Amino acid sequence: MTEQLPVAVVGAGPIGLTTALGLAHYGVPFVLLEEDAVLSSDTKAGTTLSRTLEVWNRYGAVDGILSAALRIDEIGDIDRATNTPRASVQLAELVNDTQFPFVINLPQQKMEPILAAALDQPVLTQHRLLSFDVLDDRVVLHVETPDGPRDIEASHLLACDGGRSKIRDALGVKVVGETLPERYMLIDVLVDLDVNNARDYPYLAYFADRSEWMVLIRQPDNWRFLFPLGPGAEPPGDEDLLVKVKQFIGEVDRIELLGSVVYNVHHRVAEQWTVDRKVFLMGDAAHLITPMWALGLNTGVLDASNLPWRLAWVLRGWASETLLDGYEQEQRPVAIEGSGEMAEAARKYMAQQRGAVTEATGAWATAYNRTLLSVRLDVEGVGDWSMVATTAAPPAVRAGDRAPDLALQSPTGRVTIHDLCKDSFVALYFTDVRRRPEIPVNDSPALKHYAVSRWDAPHDSGLRDRALFDPGSIATNRYGVPPESVVLVRPDGHVAAVAPMGTGVAEELYTHITDRPVPREVS
Image (cartoon, rainbow, N blue to C red; front, top):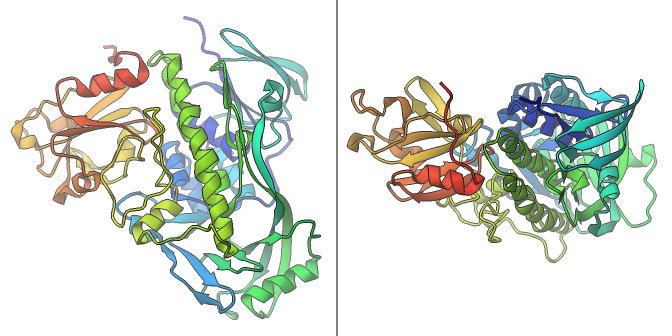
C-alpha cells in the first residue's frame, strides 16, 4: 500500500491553522507552510462567534481558546447621540441550541499561538511557496526554505494565504466585487471603565451614529475601538485618537494607547474556488468581507469546517471525488450573498443609512443570526440556502441547516448531538423505542445510527446500545420533524437530509451524497 501524500496548507493564519486542525482531527496527513518567521503580531480580528467555537470544539482546540478569552452573553446597541441603549442581542436565548450560547473576544495575535499549540506537529515557518505544478494524481510545491529550495508533493493544495493570495494569482482566478472608499481604524487602549470610571457597557457594544459610528470591544486585558475613516482621510495622531475615544465614552482618569491599525474594507469574492479538485481557495484567498459583526474571520472558519471532512472521506475511499464539488457549491453563496451582504447591511445600520437591516425578527432569531448559527447550506445543489432566521421561534430543521446541538442521555451518560457526529455521519431516528423500531446496528466508521425517544430503551429491547433518551422530548421538539423521521447529520454538523424512516433509508441517503456504499468495520 502506497503512503498517503500529505495535504499542503499554505498560510498559517486563523483559517490555515483551523484547516490544519480539521485535517488532523480526521487523521489526514498535512504540512502547514508559513512564509514568515513567526505568526501574526498585528492588531487584527477580535470577536469569535458561536459557530466558530463549535468548529474549534470539534477539532479539539476550544478549551485553550476559552481559557484565554473573554466570554460575552450580550451584544449591546447604543445610540451615540443620547448614549442610551437600544435593544441588545441576548445570546442566552441560544442555551438550547448550542454548547456555546455566547461569543468571545480574543485578539487574533493571541488566538493564533493557541491554535498552533493544539496541532500535533509544528508549523513550517520561513517556507515560501514559489510555484506549484498540478498533476493528475498530486500537486508538486516548489518551496524556498531556510535550508534551501525544496519540492513537496501533496495530494491537494489548500490556499489559506490571504487576500493577496499568490496561489489564486498563479491560477489566474479573478476576484470580483468592490473595495469601499471608506476604511476602518482599530485601536487598543488601556482604560478603566469598570471601577473608578465605571461604564456599564456590554463587553461588545455598537454605537450607532449617522456621522461617525464606533464599536467598543472589551478584550481580556484592554479595550478596543473600531471606527470608520472617511475616503482620503488621514489617520488621527495618537493624541487625537484618545480625544476621539473620549468623545464616545466620556472623560476618564487615565487612558493609554497600545496600538492601532488601518485597513481597507472589501466585499470581493473569487470567481472560482477550486481547480481540478486539487487546489482550493479558502478564507481571504476566496473572499474578502467587511469585518462588521465579526463576519470576516468567522466566515473563513466556515470554509475550514466544510472542506476537511470531504478530503478525509475521499482520501479514505469512502466517497468519490465528486464530494469535493460541494465545498464551492455551498460556501461561495454564503460569502457572496450571505456574509458579504450581511456585513454591508451592518455597516449601513451602524451609520443609520437607508438599506440597513433591522433586528425585528425576535430575540431568538436575532441571537441565532448574529452568531452564524443560522447558516443553512445548499446541500442539495438547488440554490436553497440562507444566512438569516426570520421566525420568532425555532422552526423545524431542514436539509442544510446547522443541526441544533442539544444534550441527550446515552446508556453511559450525557452526550450532545455534535459530539455524536464529529467523526462520522449520524442518522437520528425520532421514534418511540417502546415499539421496537428497526434501527441498524453500528457497524460502520462512516455512519452511525441512534434512536431518539422520550422513553428510555428497555434493556430487553435490543436497542439499548444505540438509543438516546430525550427527557421531556426537548430535542425532539426542537428538531420539529414528523414522528418516525430520520435526520441525517454530516460530520460538519449540518443536516444532510430529512426523510421518513424505512429500511435502509439512511444508507441510501449516505450513498446518494458520497457516491459510495457505506463502509463496514473490518473485524
